[in-house]
Image (tube, rainbow, N blue to C red; front, side):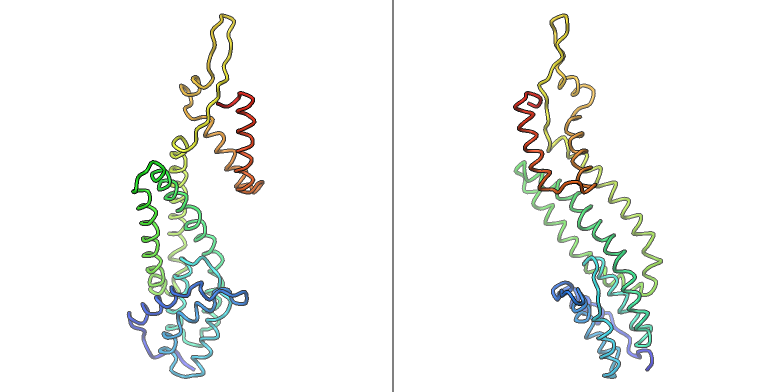
Length: 268
């Protein structure tokens, strides 16, 4: 057995990308997770790399093994694996499998943080706030987000193929910078949305011996506008991040406490 003599063309790589994206998670099963999607995506490209039936069958079996990662970033791993198939041949099957196995966990953690938590936390609240005000721009922002994401998802596979075995050292520092930047932007956006989406006021007042009174809400609005909304948001976030309560428990808890405090005259 030797390294493949056939060199994949750009059309071959793009076809493998399209095939993988169509069934990347569509063939999910408990035995190999997304392994079936991987082998389907690469099957035609591997056939060209391995004209020998035995080598081809062995490559298919190797690529069909357990694989599970964040769907978007996983494209880059599979693209890099295809490049390694071309570079190393069937003799490098263990290195290729080790490469995929070693990256699928860390990549899933980074991808989940970016695409399932940070990015939706930035764009969805903005879109929801604008839609709440009756603006169609909010709907357009949400649609544009998923369209752009689909575009970049297609590029991840090609980017991974271009890097090949150099994927890990070249991408590590870049991902760290992107993650930090998105995290900072997400916190900024969420902080800016608090006063526009959360309203908390108190009717409490201090009665002075002179007969006058100081309304606590007026004092807070002068010194720390939206202070109560920020405090409540911080407490809720702390409870959720610390996994002390679930989202459903938080919603009902806020509802019950708000009704009780309003009945007691503590909240307006």
